[in-house]
Length: 338
Ligand SMILES: Cc1cc2nc3c(=O)[nH]c(=O)nc-3n(C[C@H](O)[C@H](O)[C@H](O)COP(=O)(O)OP(=O)(O)OC[C@H]3O[C@@H](n4cnc5c(N)ncnc54)[C@H](O)[C@@H]3O)c2cc1C
Ligand code: SF4
Image (cartoon, rainbow, N blue to C red; front, side, top):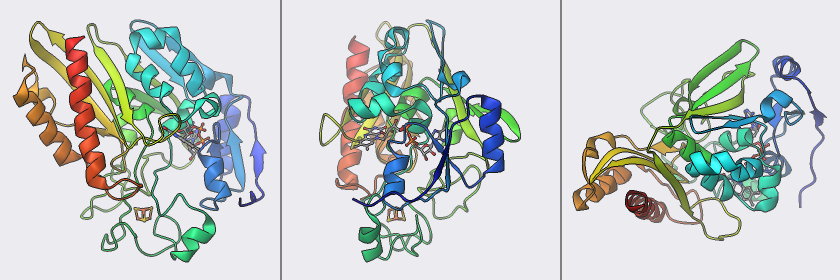
């Protein structure tokens, strides 16, 4: 196992202190539970000289949940979110996604902010220094080419694999971002910019597997908020290689409403496939009609067109897309019948 390099850990106890520290040390990294970041530091993937641990900031540790609204601070532990009775009752998609993150010890340490901002993953990236060195690194770190798509002209396709984001996207969640220049609130969908399009330059709203979040310098996630909709049914399912502890091969969140025989509202979000969690475009057009084979055919088409799984994990891309399709069909069918 590689030894950890030297770094300083600072532990602000107020939000103002955290903002000031972040402003003064732009080269720092934010630390939640460290279940992703410390692994990456140990592997020599990143080497921040300072970690700003946010877990002592009480303003960031709040969960407010009732039948109308959900608000979760970024330092809330994943295990606490998963077990919160009002989250389980009113926002089942969120509680179910939280329960399926990693293993019990990771959920006890891991935070909502860390999960939302989880680094993208790839078989050529989540490796030790010597392994990556033997492959001349890749362009997500210090190398010159992408081993997954050598002709990608500078684009990285590493995969976003967090479980909470798709669940929150189906609830049209918003996110509070705080930084040295103040606070702003954006739709959660606006945080994820991993489009991996070769014909578009990297900007604040269009990135790839390397530039996958729209955070501005010094900014961090303070909280995520969502509203409930009367009659909304929601659920999350994922397929993983080891069922007790594993990132998703694909994970699918669904929120829908039914009126009699008709599907009147449908939101589907997918993780583990693209450099961002994908909120499927086009689901509104298949609503206001009964759920039948035509609906499922259309859903298959939407997944096929928008899921761009590459060989960035141990399972082939086309298999992950197929898994996503099957999960979408399965969860929609189950929720509609419930
Ligand atoms: C074996 C194993 C299996 C795993 N399986 C899963 C899985 O199935 N599903 C899954 O989703 N995850 C999985 N993970 C990853 C991880 O455990 C979880 O995603 C966890 O919730 C990350 O939270 P954390 O607080 O530990 O993040 P950290 O490691 O502390 O941080 C992760 C990233 O987010 C940044 N960050 C942290 N807080 C903030 C903030 N408030 N604002 C902005 N940036 C911030 C950090 O700087 C870092 O870049 C797994 C990890 C391991 C080791
Ligand atoms: S997709 Fe390509 S550039 Fe990105 S981490 Fe994998 S090999 Fe590296």
